Length: 385
Ligand SMILES: Nc1ncnc2c1ncn2[C@@H]1O[C@H](COP(=O)(O)OP(=O)(O)OP(=O)(O)O)[C@@H](O)[C@H]1O
Ligand SMILES: [Mg+2]
Image (cartoon, rainbow, N blue to C red):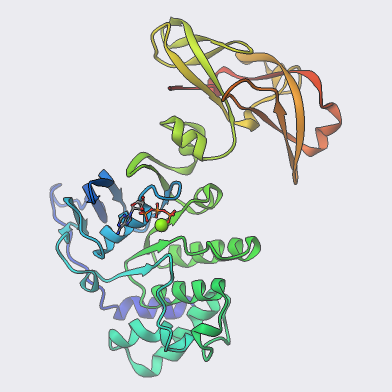
């Protein structure tokens, strides 16, 4: 596979404009740069001043709930939809007005958009023929791309004879066959079962890394985004609320929405009762906690803690002498999660109280009983309401 990839890179007819030199010989410009993109449809603002910079070779995920504008942003980036304001730059060139077919981006659409009258192999070969590749080389490239998506031997099948997940993988193979410098993937694994999905995630990542392809990948699956991405853009209502590496998005999200969207966590309504420098004392319905942050006393906030940060008070991590918060909570449910269990505690109104523990430690806990829990002050997040 990699041999062919290397050969393909040499003969690629992909547009590769020279970056603008604004830094005295250094090419510091992002590979893809969306600036101030706004799109309105019938008085509704679908994209609201969205800016996004992607470095060459990076894998970026757009993560957000249904209807937040992910597909629309991809369509604007690929030239399939116009924007009311803003610019799209690729390798330093303004391509905002360049039509989609001249942008040389690989795109996998949410609805696959395969050619139903062509066979699987003809679909995958389509872009290669359009690029006037050496005809003798095409069958082996097609075979390699189909093998990559676990569809070796499917070349002669008709599209209508394939399952949804198989069609989706043909769409991925077709987009990658021409080795575009930039590939836009709109939920490319949504129709796959979990096992195949994980295999494809690893395969795709390895391939994309090896050819230094730049990728924007749309998903509403936070685990998929955390596994695959160099950076994640969390989208909400046509805006990007957070754009950072997976670890930062997970442990230091910039907004309550980003915190809530990336995993089930503890969140409590609270009121700031004291602020000493950047150390806050907060009142919750379950007791007082402390956290770092800058809010005025009297402010209503939400306190957030990732479930794996919370453990039973008095256990090994609690004894480490760190600055910790402690609460007495009422344990209501223990939920099986494979190697982990989630402990759910009685919570008031829109609060949620959940801790994650190892299944091995499960005998320590009894539902319908009080449990003292603790977590580090530094793992306590505070968001404005
Ligand atoms: N052509 C259109 N006409 C009217 N509304 C549209 C059009 N295209 C998109 N929208 C609206 O814009 C919003 C964003 O749509 P978009 O398809 O970008 O969402 P998405 O984040 O991709 O969602 P999903 O996860 O469900 O695919 C939605 O409210 C949608 O109804
Ligand atoms: Mg979509």
